Length: 462
Image 1 (cartoon, one colour):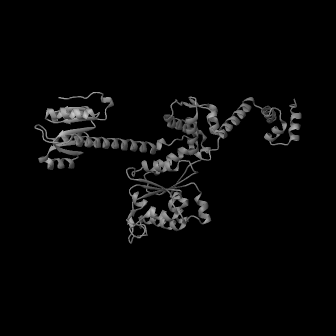
Image 2 (tube, one colour):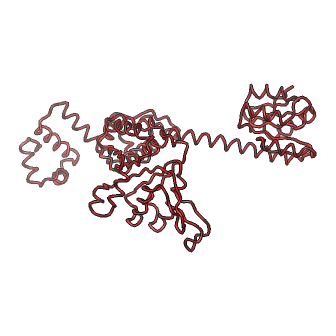
């Protein structure tokens, strides 16, 4: 028999109660229902299995001793259906040993009869918290995996297609990879894609920005230390090479590693072993190293600020990311992606971008590359008012790019000569300054004499 609580869609969670004592079932359904849980009750383990198979339950509360199917057997069968199901056992004092055995088999917890109501509710609350944490962890893992998939790195330009081919080809190699490119081009995204698409995907991905860690701390961060290695070393600490063993260590801004530490890093890459600070023995590590730099390491080698042997060791395979200004055909795809990303946080629906605004984005130099574009679209989505991003939603310097492009586009469509274009521009500037020739000359970047000569030449004196 089952007893369903009402308003299940608004419940704090759904619970299945299994007990051959009908009054116990009624009692549990009542107190749990008052707390906002949706409750189903059955008096038999076999019926519980049928109900569990057909429905989703966040928690099962079962008696340990039942005539047809013991709680331990029910637990085993439930775990076969769903290994992550949470089971709370009710047991008499004399069967605690059996309850402990059941917990070893995967039960969440047990409560001895007779129990206090608050004791039961606390354990139910803890079970629901564990369920929430599990679901959140699954969601985060799914998001990370989706983010790190190669096909989610946006780009259809020839330069990016070449990058994708290289990543797919070398992901499963153990060889070190050096990723180069300007700031904001997505070097860490490529490193994560290399990790996710390799046989090391289930291992750790540990990223460290070498420029963000003080020189005095970088060695201990990378290699770890043992207790007593220095004044504040109260206990052993694993380094990042150890943390990344079995996976990948990503050394971002590798150019910022000081020369004295470069020699130790080279030794690790060659011998595949590290020696923590203060340790007497080295320790083997199974860590693949990916590195990245926005500086030209070849120049640093020639200048003597980066070791040549370390450079060769890091640069076994090189992936160079093009700046955004060299792949303007990817801008519409990136804009569409960022609009969808940021429009979830605003009340109005943002469906796209107007052609004039998109032209302005294509004509911008993008010194900050994709990161700068992302921030620009975020600003436009948050501050704009219409259903599409307009030229007015962009920062002034970008809007100017759009206006200049529009003027040139019109001139091209009319097939104007340079003389015609100069005449129209001088006329527009005079309109803007309301005939103030001193101000017009300043805007045009010429002296007043030159402006007067042009006005005479183009018959613009009136």
